Length: 355
Image (tube, rainbow, N blue to C red; front, side, top):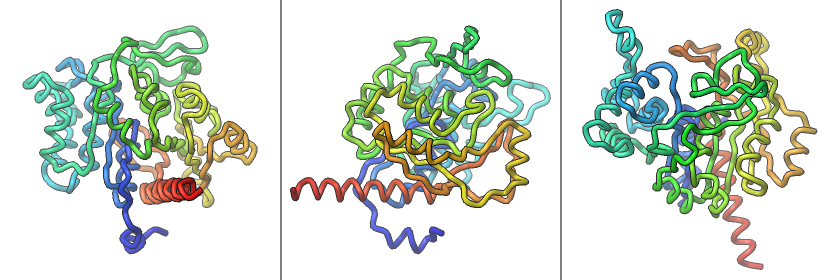
């Protein structure tokens, strides 16, 4: 068990950490890593089209603000202060159905973008307003959509369709605008990073979606940073039905190319709440329990696997607004694992220097 006393007893590194993915996954990793790293950057997906995010996109012709809003508020200096809570507040309106359930933060980002003409600037202004404890960057300021070709040949035209249920498996993921550029400060952050973490999050619509923007994969191939993938704890209906851990890793390495991914953090739960797992299974969510053979196959690709019970202990399924709950990672455990990786890199560097 990791206590506050344990964390304060561990000296922070001077390392720069960059996390890529969706709003909830990136923020959870950064919250766990915050005691150990001197410089934190979240790079967040912008192709969501569902729920109030999709309405805000249509209203203001902007990239998706929802994951960015989630990340900003989670990393606020005081998430329970008025402004962070206001950003997460959802309007209620029977009179205007499009606004019913709209997160106020989405409207704020839309308004700031329209007022200034600068989507990334709107994110930075909001971060300043709430005292964000990490730099939060959109993966791109291009307003494009995530698309997918399915195994049966059909093409899904936006993120909501890509993650839709009861369809053929996803064969290929692409952007409606294949030349949509990565936001330049993201490329700068990757070039300067000591560690880059990909995930966790929805494999196709958050994790892989961030890797599709022009210049991003090249930057990962060129970075001197340790590149780490935090594999999901469960499958996700509509995206990774019947997937194993090795299938998640394979999708990432197919996009990045050989030799880019250094380490994978893999959850293997030790204590199983069978009743809770049965509740998730009804919704098509299944715990990933990798076999030794899977882990050996990943290691054969030259990728280190760190296997531990990283799952967050909860009292049961959470009720989320218009969204499926799943088994999340424990931020403290992920943060400590990344810290140890950073220390290992320092030790390896010192050893090389001595030799």
